[in-house]
Image (tube, rainbow, N blue to C red):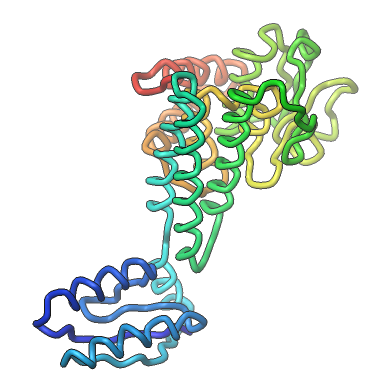
Length: 311
C-alpha cells in the first residue's frame, strides 16, 4: 500500500511553490505524474504538513490510499523508488576521495569522509525499499574509512579481522594451487586475474567441474565453502582485495565496482555493460578455461590502466 498526494499548487506566492517542490524532493517521493506523488503508507503522515500548506495558500491537496491491482502494477510502482542511480552518484564521490587520499592532508580527508558518510546517511533515509545497492554502499563506506585510517593512523592497533575478513600476508600465498568452478564468469575471471597479477604470479589455477573434487591444500575461491568467497555484501573479488590489502587501490576498486554489479547487482557503473559484452564474447570464443582467462586478463589489464583509473 502507498499514500498518494494529489495537489495543485497555488500560482502565488512563488515561495510556497518552491518550498513544496523542495520538500517533496527531500522526502524522496515517487512521481506518478505532475501533481501526484507517492510514499509508502508508513510515511503517509509526512504528506500532511505539505497538504495543509498548499490548502492554506489557495491550492488543492488530498492524501489518499493507493493499492496496486496485481503484482505487475506493484512492481511498476516499486520501480519508481529505485535508488540505484542515486547510489551510483554517491559512489562517485566515495571513489574520488579514495583516489585522492595519497595527496590529502588528514584534516581535509576526514572532513570529506564525514561529508561522504552524511551523503550516504541522507540517501538511506529516503531509500524506502533498500536492496543490494544499499548494502554495497555501506560496505564501500566501511572500506573507505578503513583506507583512511590505514593512511593516517598507521600506529594505531587494528583488529586482524575486519568485517569478517582477515588481513593476510601475500608472501605466504605464493606458488600455490588455486581452485574454482569451471567455465568462469565475471567474478571468477576477475579473481583469477587478480591472483596472478597481484597475489601469486606463479599460481596454478584449477577449474573444477565439481567443487567437491578440489585437491587437498588447494585454495578455493568463489564457491560455497571456499577459502575466499562472498562475505556480507562483498563478492569474491572484493574479498580478495580486502584480504590482501589491495582495497586502497582506486584502480582496482573501479574494477571491483563493475564486477560487483555484474555478479550481485547493486550500484550501476559505466564500465559494467562493456565488460559484460566483451567477457561474454570471449566466453563464446574460448572453450578452454585457461585460454579464456588469458584473453580476459588482457581486458582487466586494460581496465586497470585506463585513463581515469588513478591509483
